[in-house]
Length: 190
Image 1 (cartoon, helix red, strand yellow):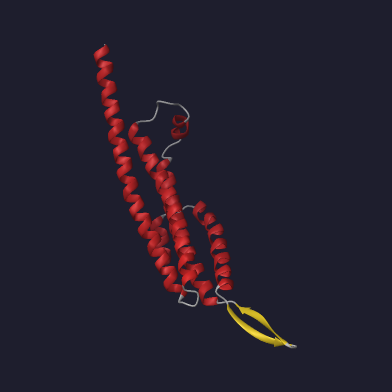
Image 2: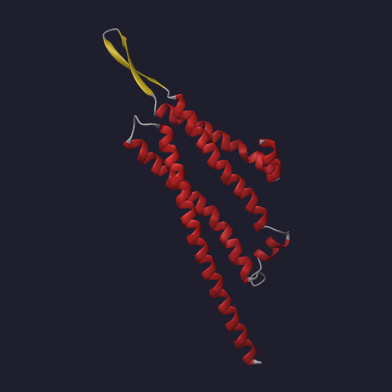
């Protein structure tokens, strides 16, 4: 089943190389969450009680899996968007020469770059909300906190994406109006 899904996505070797830091980040996040939500037990040594923290493996595994899934989905989107942004070899040549790109290409590339920024900012907000939920509910169920943080991340991403789409459409209309005005003035001068 997983092989069919991966074959249908037609992912490149660069995608699989990019999974290495994602796996590393997911593992370190899981370890940190396991230590953070560890259970503190006291053992008696001599005449005093010494605190000993036992890592909460369930919290670590759940948070590691969530981070892995979110970053993998973002990496899939990014690896699919980059070839769209850079369709041919002339993109870099046109990029450094002013006046060669059309308004549609400029706004389209701006929209795709904005999606990447929105995903990054939404992920940051999701992490902050996860932190707020974990501070308010230290002994609560970790999976519900992570699920709510992921849902808030998705909600923020979708709202921001819709807002960004409207802004890009307005930019496109505005630039087309400028182009039409320029063509009219150019024809009147002839």
